[in-house]
Image (cartoon, rainbow, N blue to C red; front, side, top):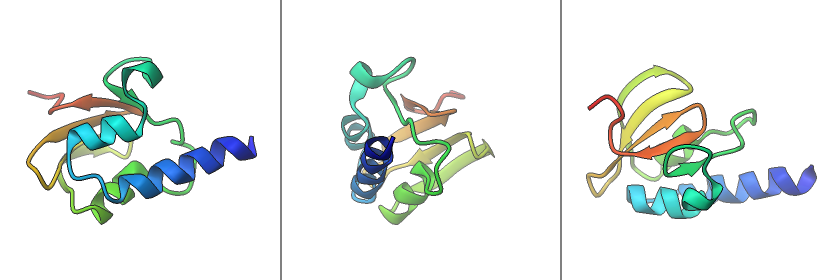
Length: 94
């Protein structure tokens, strides 16, 4: 399992430079890695979060109902929604 957490750590580090929804989807493996949505983050049980990494990259919170359900806006204006690890392009509430 050590390899799994090394992959998660690498993804989170790379997300710290994500400037668009496309960047996030590419970093997290796109649809090939998704059970639903446009991408999937498998490290939800870890210490660091996608939210933290995207805040480092300059993203802003649009809304948040829980730490597992939120929407953020990228520096380029694009949006992603996070739903229990599934990543969706855009605002899932609109």
